[in-house]
Length: 278
Image (cartoon, rainbow, N blue to C red; front, side):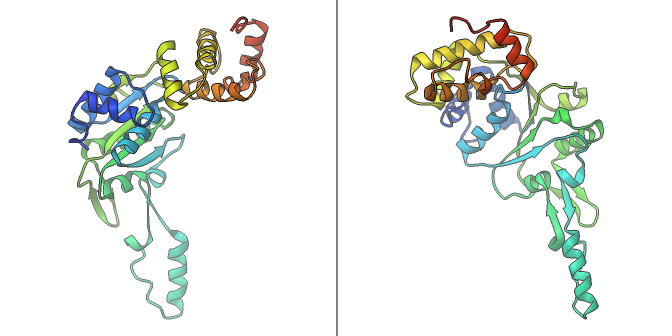
């Protein structure tokens, strides 16, 4: 992957080929993460396109995308490996009839979760660790060790180390502050909502041939919505869906539910006539 993305411009072109229009700062961060083999932490509001960076990068380079979706209570059995207890039980029952069950804690019964899968994959990997801010402190500490060595230990099998370091992208919606140690281990980039002009370009890249007036109308509406104190402002994905909806039904207010997903937000916008004149 390093050779294919040897420059910032190459990264920008690669992402654009998958419909992701990255600015130079983001392209530079991705390029450095690949060249230095360091994880890249992307923070920003929900819906600004953090996850899409990893997807577009993997698709553009032919790398395998492996995603670990973080959540409260995530542990090694969700992230690294587990044992197929049902098959182990069947093997034990077969042994009662005289069959050889084999070694119960061998690779035959091992279930590889995303982190172990990323270490053992033979080829380029983009490892997406999504919404790390939803995990707890204990898992964050484990992840710090994992990222330092790109290795994990399975007590029954020994240590597994990556032959080729994956390209790692972590995302955070900043629902809580991550520990400084993890941040120091990563390169960092904040993704903000795009400026209206850039958002129009994104819409046209994702929806080729779309009516420019419709795209401009939706982008202006989204700009106004993001200026309001909403629970969940619309992201870029909502902008694209809203454009598609408006192409089918020319009713900005009636299609507002494609952009806003909280009743209180809908009420605030309608009562305040926020979209009047759009």
